Length: 244
Image 1 (cartoon, rainbow, N blue to C red):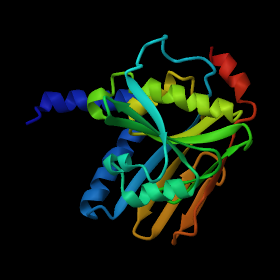
Image 2: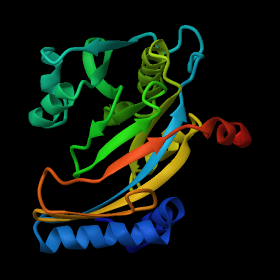
Image 3: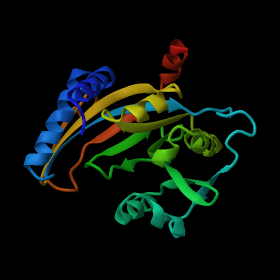
């Protein structure tokens, strides 16, 4: 059973990583989810872009025991994915590419790429990286919990960068939950830049979206109604240089 001192420490760590606003949203989300039995949820995403690395992320020979493979929709390994089968099917239908990480034939992670617009499968939203010929979308980078401090994450990104470079992509955009500190920290090492943020309030068939970028506000009551975020990466190179 967690002690009071332990809970205080955990709370202070959340404040340090998330800030008061995100902690308040997290607590509110838990409360609303409990009283509504999961029918009411809050999501807050940071919309980011990271430059596509042209050089290896790991020294020669490091992490080579981890095999990275680009799979097709019919691959049997999909049965081991910790995601609903319907969501996986929809991703492939959108044209997404899936990179899988294996260690001694054991599935240990995946990373998804899409050279075009992405229809979100957690809330109702569409993300369009721009310009189309220079920007792509990455999403749902997963690594098995017992290996998240290992080399699977950089190995997945090494191969992802190769694919993006082969397609002349300069920037990869994505959304990361404001409540996922580990993912935010991991991506920050790649020189991510902020494109904005979006807050989704979902209650039954209704969805309210508030965002720091266009369209700023959107009200939806059915699946065919959703906000589209056009994420323009032009001009980011100057920001990237100023951070170095």
